[in-house]
Image (cartoon, rainbow, N blue to C red; front, top):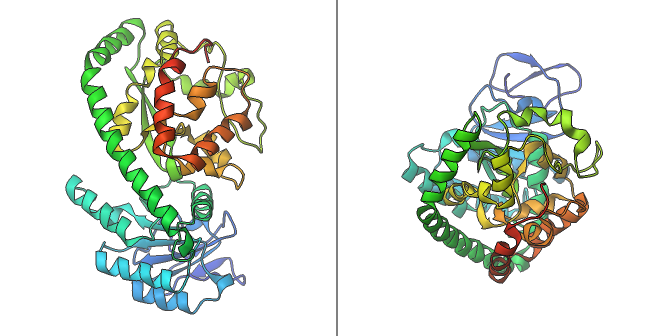
Length: 383
């Protein structure tokens, strides 16, 4: 599909300036985008009603300057090779003119070098530029752009990340940034030490799982963490193989009261899919140990809100609940030390605990949660 430029209502076919082909558009939602790049086919175009293209930052600046406030795009996609000076200048342009204060800016992952060291350097350059909110693969077809864009917009409002628009929040944002930097350092040290010390336990559990039931040792699935970052999440397998495929059939046993339009969590008391060894691993929380690798990779933190399956996370991308994604994904958190294993907990209660942590995140709070976690590890109910 070609990229659509300023769509008209007169025809079901839209033409992009600079491209010859016409394509039929079936808009999914009433929103617009601005694309900075030169590709003629991208996976995200059919998620928007209209869009415009600019081949460079200079063209984008010219285009944005000519737009009235009510015509600004809902999201801006950057798809050009990374040049730190050019990106920084463009971000300064947006900040000085207070443009796109609450509009997500997403960079194409394909424009970053794949070597680990160079990728890390480029990530730091993007972070220093100060306006990019997310980095994704523009060619991917499995991204829910409606949820992602809505979440990023709400996240920018809640955290006032457009700090040039609200300079009075700069000190608070700087303190939060310093804490998150310190938190990341502690995560690396603690997770690395834990992995080394617990290596014999990893080996014993892996052997026991293979002896008891057929299937892989590790369970991995896609989860949504901080700012709706999607990553591969690891646990020791505690259920029969392919247990995820039976969720719909067991939905009537869900301990959470949910409805089609509201937030949704899924948990079963005495889940029939859990193996005998799996019950022990869950009740002792040993099944969570592989998440130390997620922490080491930077997907998660030792303390935070639990990363959620996408079918759960997508029901929380509303003004009321989205704040819970402002905190890092974590192995342990406020929910675990207060309510883990208590089947009477409601959906709203769990979300409120997540939001409370996101609003009050600090070193003292994290240390308090870590101190209370050992007591909460041995839960009494099989949930």
